[in-house]
Amino acid sequence: MIPELKGDRFAEFTLPEGCLLCGGEVTIRATPAGASSYCPKCHWLSRPRMKVKGNGLELTYAATANA
Image (tube, rainbow, N blue to C red; front, top):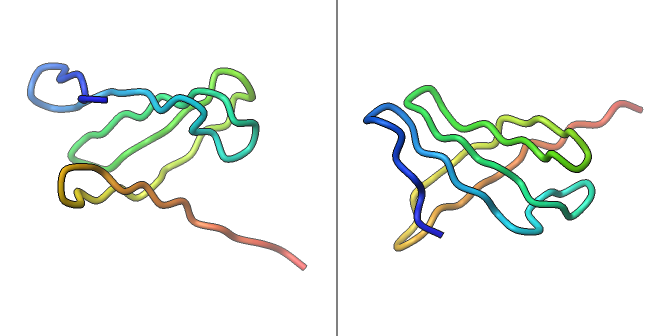
């Protein structure tokens, strides 16, 4: 999906079935400061890292655990 440009400062797009927690649709907003994601189904907010790779984007999420 082609990101929708909002002025010249950020782009917003959705990833169907992109939520790692519930499989719902995720909205991604990319700004000069980084990316943020939100799932309206389970309300998960995240700050993924975003890289341009070839003709697409790569989003990575940090994983942390406490034992």
